[in-house]
Amino acid sequence: MLKAYKRIRGAYKNGLAVVAVLRDACGGCYAKIPPQRQMEIRHRKRLITCEHCGRILVSWEDKEAKN
Image (cartoon, rainbow, N blue to C red; front, side, top):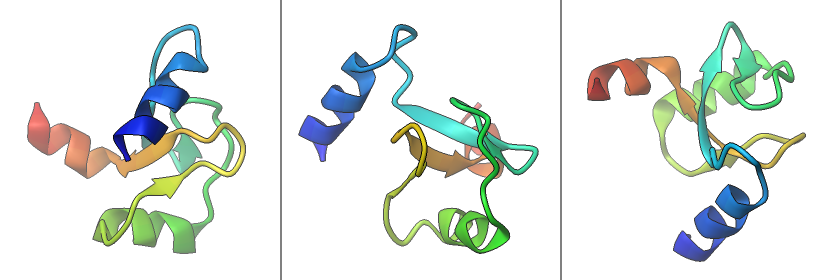
């Protein structure tokens, strides 16, 4: 998992490998995330990556809880 994280992080200029789902879209590439996928992200049973950019997705509620 750490190896995948480092690979994703190195692939982008801004170094973001983990992004939140904002307004039903990926926080990295702004591609729309289907409702079923958003539900899977909120349940946190496994790592979900964006189909377009490959970044790891987390729900916005998770991000708010950490701040």
